[in-house]
Length: 122
Figure 1 (cartoon, rainbow, N blue to C red):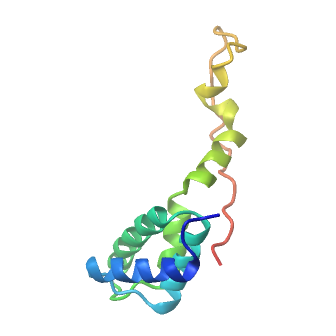
Figure 2: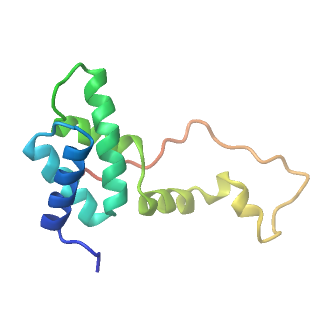
């Protein structure tokens, strides 16, 4: 069980947005709260800071739901990051830890591989 319910996350994020002078729409705040409840409040706060930057780049005055979705896709939470690393273990040196790889074989990665698609935060 996660330490906070979605409503508690929404309140924490609302207070944090006020402290950081981030104007955020209610739907965007609700999505951040859902993300926080499913991942961590810390990750959602990082996303909120990123959404403020994205909002500024598009010359917006308030963080919108699309800003939250974009931030979510730009940076992975620890669970999605671990899943990606496990799925692509052969592409990283951690696959050599067991001593089973041949040291004479160059370790290459397939640049054409795309990261796994992220689940929609909706």
